Length: 321
Image 1 (tube, rainbow, N blue to C red):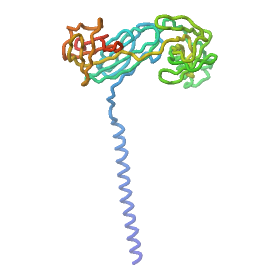
Image 2 (cartoon, rainbow, N blue to C red; image 1 turned 90 degrees about the vertical axis):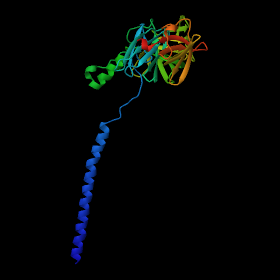
Image 3 (cartoon, rainbow, N blue to C red; image 1 turned 180 degrees about the vertical axis):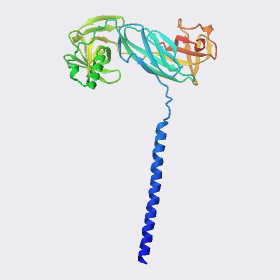
Image 4 (spheres, one colour; image 1 turned 30 degrees about the vertical axis):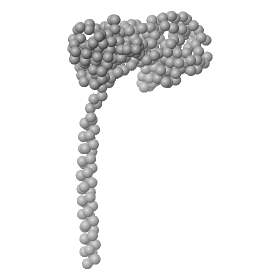
């Protein structure tokens, strides 16, 4: 009798193990399938933005006009607003765009705005430095490493460093410390940057349209400077030309894209996403005359805010293109 009970217990336990193993196998088979299905179908990104292909932020340019190119949403309207002129273009169906922009001497604050069909707007600010006096030769720092004895990875790193030494950049900000051959500054981004100088560095004091040569000893803590040169492998800027100038102020240029609500007494009212903006026609502007603008038509306006009121600088009618 005891043997029969023992056999029954063992048989029940074995049957339970078989059932449990079958359930485990079923779950382990289904789980990877669910995971792979989730990974294979990611939610597509619908983010609307602007990516600048060239030039790079804080790059030093020696020629004007210069072509700015990038990518945004397909068919979006793109406004490139420079210090003294503006241009409006429509991105290709793949979102690519490019346009020439005139530069002014010194720092240029470029505003790049894009608008899609719903009126949504994205904006990117690009600071460039334009100098016809900047020496165009490559940085003098040499790399004495024998590339034939280096690995492929090391050679690629060295190539990137050498490439960076051929593209001039700028550090812009306020001097916080001065050593024997190094200037430390707080950049516009808040970062602390290092700029080295040597006997070939040129120093210029630029106030408005007036500029004069100075010496290294004339540069003081608290000065606002634009240091132009080439970066080395440690992100130290090997300065070729240094401007002591006035601090940059925020641009007074604004851009709006919307519908013409009204034009009364040379005041244009633009409605964009429920917000109305009043803009006064200035003495001169780029674009159509007032009598060519119809109520309820789409419009893009670049306007200035530095006179206590909004004044037109560029008026563009997308429907006319």
